[in-house]
Length: 487
Ligand code: ADP
Image 1 (cartoon, rainbow, N blue to C red):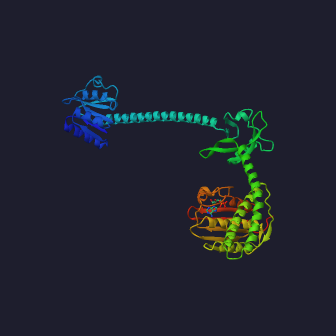
Image 2: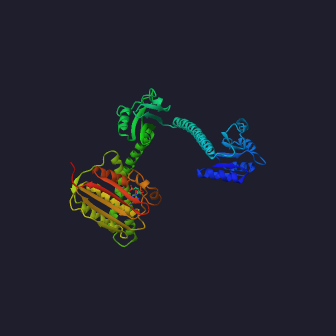
Image 3: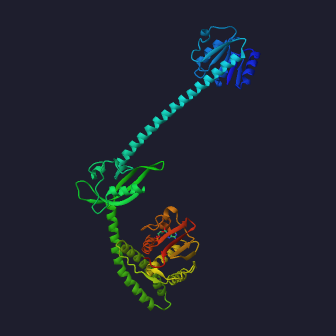
């Protein structure tokens, strides 16, 4: 905007008209004092200043303007009555651009000067803005660099403080950074630690993963320099990406020897305990069954024996699960495969559940007409487990749907309930050994073994398994297996 300062209204009028015709936005002031007030609050690109004004004259106004940091660079065109010496005009206003024009005003000359000074001011203003912008950018970069340095230092000290061996490599697999623990296992910070002769070499593992871009988790044995103590370590390797491109690999080795030994001891304990418990329990069951035959009258002992037998069968089931788990662990779970009548097996199971849980509606959909190749007893175990869980984990809505469907050579079996359901986070772990969802732990009995064994059984049949579930709405557990023997 251009500010016209003149005490004569007619001068202001004609100047304003001239400039407005040429599309310059214009503001006006009729005295030096008013002009100064306006300059303080508004932004002007040019001031046209009458020199002869009553009160504060044009030169005084200019002198004050040059004292304000905000306005010292605004160009001024003085309007003088006589051709004044230019040196005199620039007095007190050497910082900004300045020009003058004598009265009577020649509109063409005035326009020329206005255009030139206006443009000049605009350009210098733009330059100033750019300069400011650049300064800010430099500042920001400096700050970002400082932050990045601090982060790197922080990360380094974190990596030094962790109990793991940590390292990074280039995208080609060349070791780039290692924490100091590395040197307890490797000869230098550029070579990988040696692995046990029966384990894979780290470099070749790394090369495979570099080729696929996949993260890696594997167990290998490492030995501290100067010892012969080969300890199991979990090797983790992750690609580090920037803008979706792998820029390096980061890895750790975590000593898991103690955990492995504890897990092995636990497995041994489970195996011994379940074997030891099985023998006396079998005798108890046999004697109870004898007793059951004897107490045929209507005495309360009938009921006691019946109830004891129910509990003994539960105990028997639990011990069988524990035995299965130790057999699985030792690779001793036998799988004799034959073709059998799956439909008859399933119908029998459904009938048995209907009798045992009369308050539940157990629906059956689909039919399997062809014989199925597999281990009947083990598949019965899976079916029982799925239906048992469906009943156990749906105490409110007592309805279970058992479905089968056949597509080509594939049999799909599923059990749907409308019970407590399982959150997506928990679903990931359901088929893991001893896993129980927190909700199940607090309100339902169990050991978290059943599904783990089911998963193993289905895998041995060359099948797939899984769950679809929503918390509070219910779950569908399913498996698929090939119907005929595979080559
Ligand atoms: P258990 O039932 O003895 O705990 P399982 O291995 O059979 O062991 O099941 C593991 C866990 O899966 C259970 O503890 C429970 O959290 C969850 N689960 C299994 N079946 C269902 C189901 N039908 N509805 C909800 N949760 C289930």
